Length: 204
Length: 219
Image 1 (cartoon, rainbow over the protein chains, first blue to last red):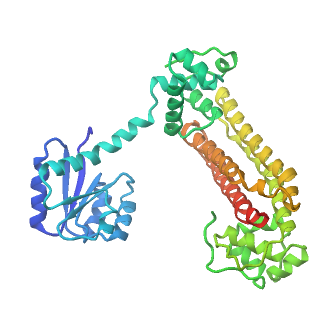
Image 2 (cartoon, rainbow over the protein chains, first blue to last red; image 1 turned 180 degrees about the vertical axis):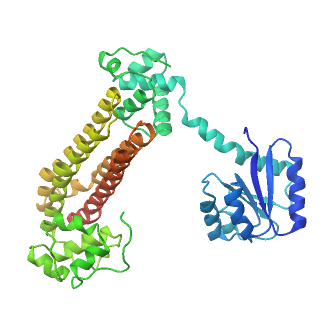
Image 3 (tube, helix red, strand yellow; image 1 turned 30 degrees about the horizontal axis):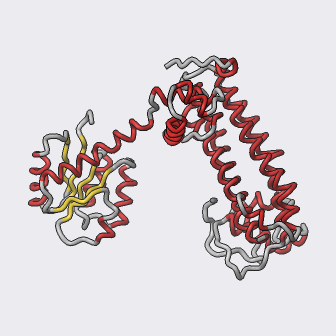
């Protein structure tokens, strides 16, 4: 991630808070800015001002209902919430969190848990972009070629073409050929007259 | 579906004007049954009788529109009334709603994007053709089969799936415009999109009447 991860730490106990801070500072693989918050009132303000990427919070501050509320108020659907478990907690409450850090986790475990949450959204973003191969296939599809014809042209198996097409559909959420045509024109993969005359030139 | 406007169900003795003001999507139900406005102080039952509409069927649709689950002990639906409603609903989409949307679509298309506009219109026309095919099939085949005793079983299969596909195509069209169309006039484009959102809801509701009221009645 290019910019540091903004983490808001919500924990009333000063001892625990400083303990967590010390641990976080030792995680030198992750760039982060950490803000401390001691109660739900401060948390509310902090959601507006700091706009955190991640919350590490004591589950007793947020019951299940207000966890949803917190995510809503933050205006950030990607906000990750991590429960800081320092006592026995109801599993159904912990289930609502993206991750749970226990008082007895090792530094490595904590590092792994945080890294997993931070990497995820970047991965998703990359998935939305089409590969060069997928763009080639789109151009073939809107020119009315069958899977078999596309496979022959690109020297791939029909099976591969089918799986590419499935990936295209799920990335773009477009399932029809006429929808793909619109996509291709907007993204300058093809001009309409090329489709008609059957000249396939991929501009990418 | 539409938002919940009221808890509990409407009774035939409730006032029709109150029903409409609490639950404005009911207006579409009225017009599909050929009930005109000017309902005065009359009750739901009085207005329905006046227009020779089966009150129970009318209420069943109203309750579906406002997301109220239908229970088995409710009065049965009068099939000819329901079919009449559905035919009128088809006419509404095919003769009025979709042509109107197409007209508006042309008016919001951005000048100078000829290729793109052609592709967008083609998409819409293919979608319209698919809906038309499906609705005419229902008008010409399904409804007459439903009133006959034989071959009813055949109907239930594949019915709901077609509906999902039609709804999905309109949603896809809307998403394509949102994601890719370079609209220059935000206001007219917004109005158009609101219209599509609305039509999406109307279509979902129409399909729900077929899936949840029509289908259980005939099988």
